[in-house]
Length: 142
Image (cartoon, rainbow, N blue to C red; front, side, top):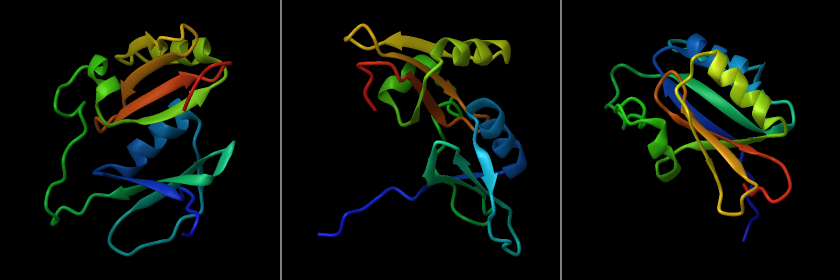
């Protein structure tokens, strides 16, 4: 059997520039060259320390059937995200990251894993997609 690697995660959005700016400002993604498609916008992003995995933001096709919305778009609070779909990232400076979220006025939910060491913060991107950032200290899992 072939060995697979994760290549990219695609998120559709009605506002590519707004969502790209969020991922750049809040999570530290950087834009990388992306194709110029006629008729719709895309932005390809990567994290500097994870160059093999990309985030592709794709302009939603207004003629396509609607897709399920993220839990935040349904009005769910961040406290429900540990048991709902979300993307997870890890960060070395967890406290600094959470302080930055709070300074932006981001609604969030924090918890600690049963190991007592791994801390997590859950929040939404502007389209209501769930996000998690976990402390990357000893004992943290992915």
